[in-house]
Image (cartoon, rainbow, N blue to C red; front, side, top):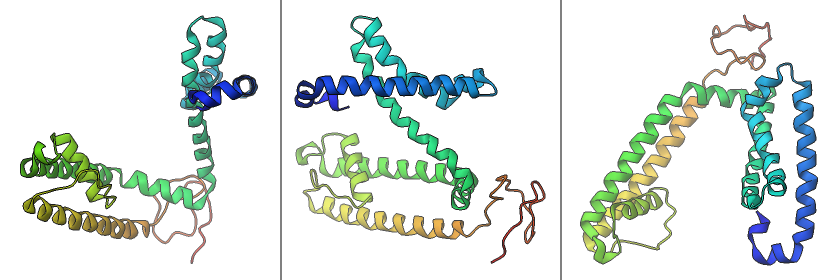
Length: 224
């Protein structure tokens, strides 16, 4: 990423190249060791993290073997996706398991909320475009939708804003709607968090209410 800045690339080019090769060698050794130690090397190679590990080292080698492939080094930004390995640790965290349970249990509600929000943004954008029009800076419905998102989320960049009295009144209503959505979302999330989490050992969700032990793995529940 730093090489995309001209001044940094010209001043620290040799250092960055050395650093690039150092990490490439480290990631290559790690990838080979993971293949060697995996119970099913093929399964690991086809897995999400296996593919990311491979993509992380290929661009550097291609830049040497193939002329004109230097641009492919940009792909190494995908190494950032390796941080998702930390998510594997979530199974050892009581709070993490609870969070995964809540997300899995409410994904349908989340999608409905996202779709409803998208419909609301589209409607607000279309209405404001009709009210203000290109002469007041709202040159298209997508740009008006951008204003709707900025206003609903209470960010308020101010790069474009309604100029007419009707538009300002409509903007005030949108601001109130934005606050209402935030309050309701927090309230619903708070109620949902109180739901019983799954077993922190096996992550099974079909548990009997009030049980002292998990019937699947025998893990003891601590009663509060």
